[in-house]
Every structure is written in structure tokens, then in C-alpha cells.
Image 1: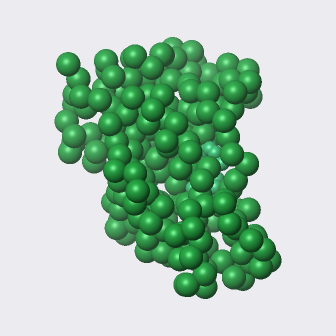
Image 2 (image 1 turned 180 degrees about the vertical axis):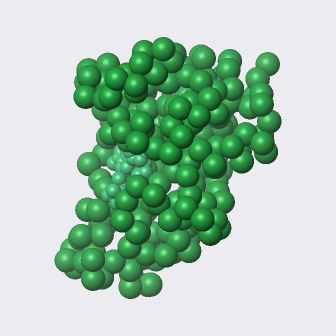
Length: 219
Ligand code: ATP
């Protein structure tokens, strides 16, 4: 029997918030994961430089997941001095965990619809499963028409159920209906900068860290 799948949740986490934590908690349960690695990006190739240092973003993730033993902080990307690509992270994890370990790359529906812009995206699908959270009623099936033909093809060929995730080590694309909290890191940064409350959008420990270190004051 294969070991229970391990989930990977990458993000800038600038800062981490309840949207990320609920996504992870739901996926842990629905996909039967044994653990989720939270991997803050170092120098993300896809977007503007994060507002605060990798050390701060990592410290906030550590605080946010402290009370959930199945969540672990994985700092491999923030330690890298070169650009951090998900495919490299997955290659490292595959070497460490072995060929039999199911690995699930977790992401929201919006991120999935742009997967084909990621570095070596097809290799990603041969290293891990991709597990996509969508809002109830907004299935990928309904939205996939807006993706490129290449991504649509992979989606059609690899679509699988949750059982497949534990029976195979990589290669499936699974969808999970997960209510999306209307929270984003952008919203939190803007609110801190405008001197507005961020209570209940993220763990209090993370909010306190933001204030103690005067983060996001002039975004
Ligand atoms: P920003 O507002 O700075 O773009 P973000 O809040 O979207 O940041 P990221 O760190 O870019 O956070 O997201 C990491 C992962 O978490 C992505 O796969 C994204 O789809 C998912 N995610 C972000 N916010 C939510 C949310 N509210 N609900 C569910 N998933 C989310």
C-alpha cells in the first residue's frame, strides 16, 4: 500500500491568511493528506517582489500553522539564492521522499487556469498530482474553456477522483469543491497601510507580528 499523500502549498504568503489556512485544512480532509508543506516562495518568477522579506513571510507562516501538527513550514525556496521554480522544488521532494510517495500540489482554480505559464509545467504533472480547489458552483469543467488548448488537453487526460491520489504517486488532476473565503494578501496589506482593522482575516498571532515589525505600513 502506498503512504498517504503529502500536500504542497506554495505561495508568497505576504502575509498568510485564513483563505490559505482554510484551503489547506479542507484539502487535508477531503484529499486524505497526511501532511501539508507550506512553502513560501523566495524570489517569485511570476509576480512583483514580495512586500516584505522572506524571513518575515516565513516567520508569519510558522506562527499561523503552530497549532496544526499536520502543517509544516518548508523553507527550501526561501533558502535558495536562485529563482525559485515549483518544478525544482518538486524534483527535490521527489528525490527525498522516493518514487512511491504520492505528492499533491495544491492550488486555487485561478492559479490552475494559468498553470501552463509556469516553468516546465508539463514536468510538474509528471512529478506530482495537482489538486485544485474551486468554489462550489464554479467547477473547473465550467471554466476550463478559458484555458489554452494545451492545458485543456492535460486536464481532460488526467482528470481523476480522490482515490487516485493515494493509489498513484503523481500524474492526476483532481478537483475539490471548497468554499473560498474572500480574503487576499493584497486586501490585508492595503488595510494595514490604510490603518484599518485586519482582525479575523488572519490569525491574531500573525496580525501581532505585522504590527510589532511595522510591516505593510507604506504599501
Ligand atoms: P496576493 O493577494 O498577494 O496575490 P494571495 O492572498 O492570493 O496573495 P498567494 O500567496 O499568492 O496569496 O496564494 C497562494 C495559494 O493560495 C494560491 O494557490 C492561491 O490560489 C491560494 N489562495 C489565496 N487566497 C485564497 C483564498 N482566499 N481562498 C482559497 N485559496 C486561496
